[in-house]
Length: 94
Image 1 (cartoon, rainbow, N blue to C red):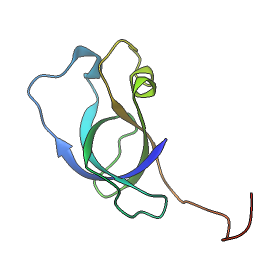
Image 2 (cartoon, rainbow, N blue to C red):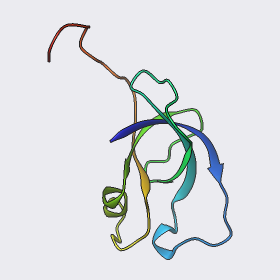
Image 3 (spheres, helix red, strand yellow):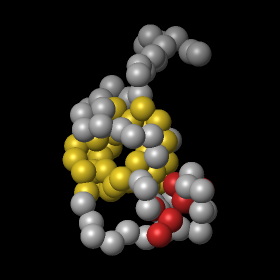
Image 4 (cartoon, rainbow, N blue to C red):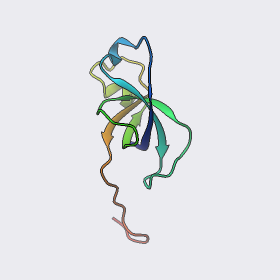
């Protein structure tokens, strides 16, 4: 799973039938601390995320499998909203 921040909404007139009822959102990948990492991408929203929220998403086959019809072309799907990130202090193991 990867962290991201929702930065926008994608509007399209025609969607893949398996995506009906789901929004497409523009997300900026981030590191666990919220710092931007890489290029923005479009993800199928499965959790009703809002602009500005931190989310986590899956890519590849896991994204397609997250939808009811696994035979769809999704390459990224938002599967959770991040409430908090806790990491061990530097030098400590989990």
